[in-house]
Length: 180
Image (tube, rainbow, N blue to C red; front, side):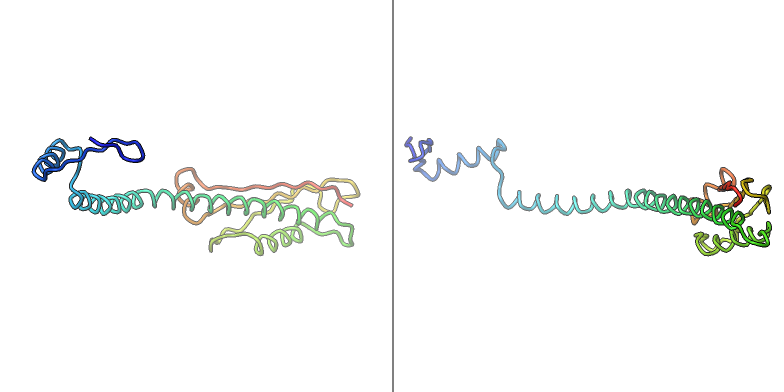
């Protein structure tokens, strides 16, 4: 036995037959693997890993797309709700401004429908908002004018499926402003 310069112990085996039998014993016990066999196993396992990754991706992709599509659908529904609220506000504002003659219910409805036609995302649906102006048309200074807008949200995919189970999704916005 001799010592290396970095103070590690190494065994000097002189006889080739002793060296060969020692290597065979180590391989049988499983302490050392044959390099070509290990390389083949590694190559085989990397191919198998690629296959497993493809299967996992195929399983997870529909779920990811469903979540992504749901986020987009929810964003569109939230946007449409904001536009319905803005349309009712525009209709109320058109009805309360001081002008002669005072706007009627049809004038207010036209303002709301024009705003909705320009800004709602309908996905080609023929749904139009319904407008009701129950009180305050042509009122005097300080009396309230109420404008209510209802819209049946159609949705693109998930909204339509949800409507099939729960019934139509109706968005409503009410604005009350005082006449000027």
